Image (cartoon, rainbow, N blue to C red; front, side, top):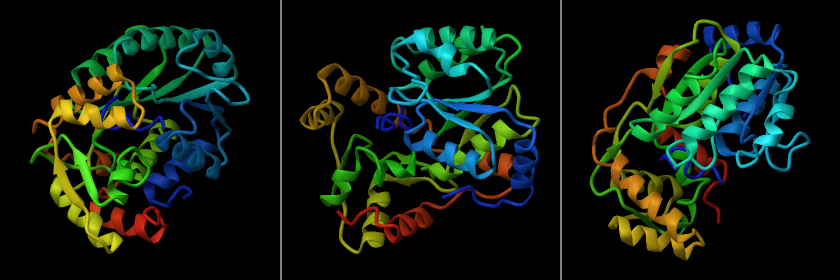
Amino acid sequence: MTKNTAYETKKTYTKQGAADSTAQEGARVMGTVLVTSGTGKSGRRVAERLAALGVPVRAGSRAGEVPFDWQDESGWAAALDGTETAYVAYYPDLAVPGAAGAMAAFGRVAAASGLRRVVLLSGRGEPQAAVAEEALRGVCGEVELTVVRSAFFAQNFSEGALLDSVLGGELVFPAGSTAEPFLDIDDLADVVVAALTGDGHGGAVYELTGPRSLTFEEAAEELGRAMGRPVRYVPVSGPAYAEVLEGFGVSGPEAGFLAELFATLLDGHNSATTDGVKRVLGREAKEFTAFTREAARDGAWHG
């Protein structure tokens, strides 16, 4: 799992001037959009925004009306039938073994179904995720592909597996002193919707980050200020973090993979910020401080 989608195992569309107008214009002529992992953190937000624009949405999930399961290719054609575009968020993560094969298989089904456009969620600075991107790009034929590579979601602190650590006052994570430009997932969803509903994004690769890089220690301090109680960052080694994950019920192989992945991602090569959000939406990405205040206001840490 990437720093973005690792916790996707787990608002309505905000107005944004020109970007919003473009989306609304596209919505008037769009067919149904398949949103894979439609109940996940990003998929749910994308589906909500599309629905608010009047775009027909098919939220794909294993328990959906039209089931979509990344482990069962037999249902993909039915899920794609009658759709025009798709948001693809691979579960459990685009960097896991087998993801490239799944992307190639999905791309072939998508091309055969007549799909017009795909927006793919990927991880920033992940070599294996890039392999999966290429596997999809290589077989999707005339399907227009846009890749959105995301930094670590800010909402991993308020909705994901790090929530319990934050609530407990000790943010345990194997990031050392590396800084990360945390991305608000609402910004990601807005970019995805713009790419799905607007023109000019085909073939683009957008790297999305927040506007400022923080260490996990700095992030813990900001979380604590927003919550009104201390949160302490506790750096641990990769193997120690794998043990923590196993304590939460994650299988040994998956825990080991995650720990190794985070060690690779949080070595400093992803610390720089980008202007990807502004390029697509015409506005700055949301500040981490704004995220913490909004999450606190909305009761994310009342547990």
